[in-house]
Amino acid sequence: MKQERLDETDRRIVQHLREDGRRPYAAIARDVGLSEAAVRQRVGRLLRDGAIRISAGTRPTRQGFITACLSIRVEQGRHEEVARAIAALPEAAFVVTCIGASDVMADIVCETHERLYQVIVEKIRSLAGVLDADVSLYALVVRDDVDWQPPAEQPAQPAQ
Image: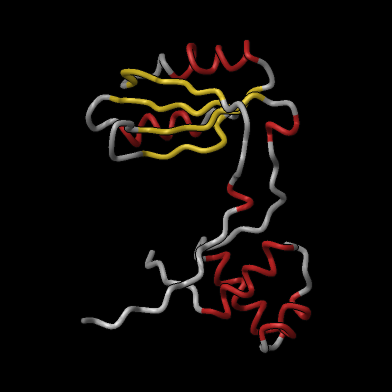
């Protein structure tokens, strides 16, 4: 799927939805200078293209859950296989394959330390292809993805 950069109108629509995912399209349309139908079409395209999703964000650490980041090394050629197996676990909140010191990174969320131990030792470290899993417990969340927004586009510098 070809990924297109968002234009200024798309970015303004996304900003409205970031502030309030339930904001009426009519209100967004007034601000961005489009019809309600045009805003609805743009939001539909952004959703279909996977550029955005509209949901209620949760913060597990603020709900008493324990979150750990796993940095996992796997056997050559098994990156995606291991990542998909971890992603299938209900405790997996975020899973990616990487290029670098880690082959797979995963955020794991559990209610207790005991459950976290079970998931890491009995489920993840025992997966075929896993060589090592380094665990870092989240102690203090300073910023998370619901706070992230794209940086303002910088104008192109003229060639010298």
